[in-house]
Length: 163
Image 1 (cartoon, rainbow, N blue to C red):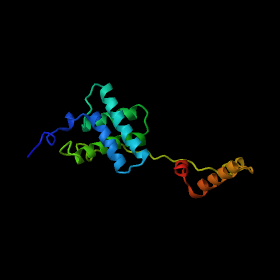
Image 2: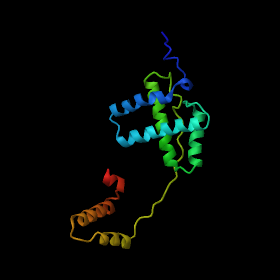
Image 3: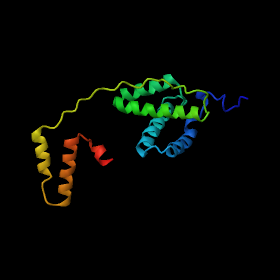
Image 4: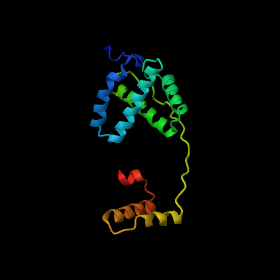
């Protein structure tokens, strides 16, 4: 038997009304705080963009592409636009899992191509100067030197050290 819920079309969903349930689901799935924040930020930004631009927020491929194009045109890094789009795509997939839509309309939607960024490594002199800046007998000096040496020796990023 087909119910009204299973016949719901992606463009008739109230995305904002479904967000709190999705956020609970993300917590129940034990997604990290940063993952939840990244996903939901993308969805909230998409909904806001739709409303500002006179569109009804919907899982529409062309609408999502236009939003991503505007993000990039507005100066967002491709990695940021990709992360925001991923949030909307994950929300769309969740709506399918919850039978809010018959099928995920954003399945297979291509993400923006990432730029390859080359970050120059510190020179030996720069590393020595950084370690020297940590010189001292205080706990924080030794801690800072240990952190700098850890990062230099392993290639860890600051977010990984702090994480």
